[in-house]
Image (cartoon, rainbow, N blue to C red; front, side, top):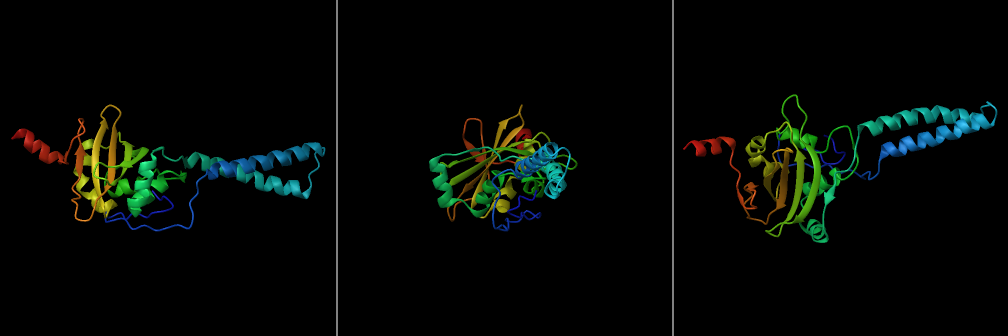
Length: 236
């Protein structure tokens, strides 16, 4: 996915971010559709009030109104709204003080309107979390908080009907390298029935381990074990 902001490398190296001069925080589809509709109604009203006579201005209005209306509706069809964000004053302060460039760009891009690709589509494909021939997991919500370690935590919750949780665990060693430097990843299986998985990126201090952790149902954390490691342990 092209966020219109960061460009994530497809070889899963640490992200290289390309800054853009501005960000759109409103629906372009609504703007174009609305302006086209207003212009069309104005021109139609002018045509009717003038007993079917069309002046030069009305002619130009029709010429521009209809394509604008159609184009705006097409944009609305391809439009993805911003992802809901749960935050707090403490979390915002932590973000300002400690968030990495990648964390800030993920948050910025996911909380604005986008067109075409899904939120986080390119990173998920780069991490091979999108099965061949199937769509990638869907980013459904974001949350930010102050982690128990004092770092800034950005939590991304995904609806992943096509990506088993074991695949998320197998890819865990790549998260810190891909979204880093300066972060540790945490994985949590939110709901098996609803197929919800949470991936958190937490800032770490210099020298602190970036080993990925799994958040267990009781809230404890342990190193993420690959499917092969868990199978070997269970059969031993």
